[in-house]
Length: 243
Length: 390
Image (cartoon, rainbow over all chains, first blue to last red):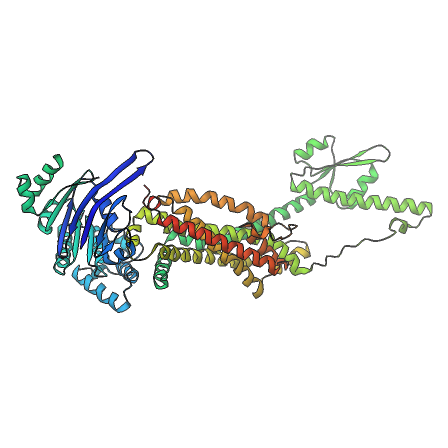
């Protein structure tokens, strides 16, 4: 599970001065739950996810992922998580098979386990036709499937996904949503950032709306509807941003 | 430090490198094809220019304003003569190769007007000088005969100069002046593109986040990448060495001087020398890789990485060149100057002058520099302001 307590991040910029990107954000994500993090561009979603993935150090506050603190035990945290950044971040000159094999080794998986998991994920995400093709020759959908497979390869307890269906066609987005639902059913803790309201409504058990670095509200769809008096998530979202 | 993870990163980087066109060009193409091509074209050009100058010197006329006896001496030496009143202008205008003027006085002065910027004029002046020296010697012998003095009074003793250095040592000096410089320079160019690709390139392509979010520690990542960079650098070095040996052996620069031909034929590279050169280059490669890594990591893009590393390349040229100069004695202090020490040691290995003590000092110094540069590179890799600089 993920427990975030008072997380803040300040950036020092030579031109813009001090910028408070994330301001005292707190939330938790339970095992077997999909938590959606919604916010406009520049709200602090990606910065929050990067802090949880231990790519950035918080200015204050902390988080505990599966029992390990991100500031005191970042190494242990990285062993628990599968992180998908907003940019797919795939090596263009390698094939999906080579990329997955590489990250399997980084996660300490032996050859047999790597092969088994790669085969399973390739089947699940329908990747068999392009496993041996260099990534720079793949379509956006194929690349994103590869990135998702890389994130889930070592069967992590926690998934941190930054806009995983961004720019994808409907069938590919569907395949990825199915993988996330399967992960949730397997008891994983899924922290999910997206701009697609319908997707958030469908996938997320609870939603946190973040804007200007601050968490505006957290709740289930019912709770958000009750609090704002709006029905659709898009309206709820806009209402909270204006508040 | 988990070496299986370091190994995985190393393997992945090597696979990535050999599939990158820019790296292949700098690592393989330049040393194996470009160097032999440049040598071949360059030496053919020089040889052709030399031959052309000598032939023109023979066929081009020499302008004269001299006495009949001097004129006869020049003609006897096979030099084509023309009378000319404006010798200097004619030489500059290239209508004659050189001008020769006899100026009355005590003693008589014979002035040779030559355009040293023109190889033909220089070659012709040398021929004229030879002919005039022979004529002068003949006149002196005639004068002595007339006075009843034997001609051997002119040579009370004979001076001879014998080079005891031996072909290998001479070859070592000739090769040492250029090999170290070229090797170190090629190592930098061979390593530059792979290192930029592994650092700024990863940042630009946004592949670095997934790697940083993996269980690999920063030290393991830096070590794996560094090892791949060192491999690329050493491959470039070995290919450069091989292609230089091949180019010089097959060089068509047909020097007329037997000693020069001997130097070209004698390659001072036995197993012992090659092993010592390799042992010199390895710590240097480690230092160079870490240093370039730390600098390139600061860049946000491939292009920016190039602009950061190019000045470093220029900084390499001067010490690498200085290290190859003969006449500079290897001292413990000089053995501690990076880049210079490797170039000087290579020259010392080739001439057979390298001492064990100096070799040990140089190796220790370069390993120390490599360690410091590695620590800086690792610190850079832990700095989120550097990694996510935008």
